[in-house]
Image (cartoon, rainbow, N blue to C red):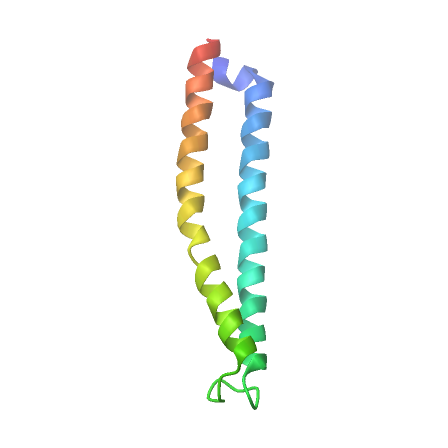
Length: 91
């Protein structure tokens, strides 16, 4: 129960989790908006329309942003390791 008495560490953990959730929500909304923009940039505005330079550029940005979620898992693991090591260091 000693772990629960240290409000500073619990507050730090809550701030970390809230930050990760916020980044994930913003990333998801951004990817959805970019996907809709890519569809709207097609000639005719439908998925089967001819591609334009704008739709190609938006598709390129979507491809690059789609790699970000793989890094979020790595960031979570590293941050949790720092929190655990910090607990044992201050102990």
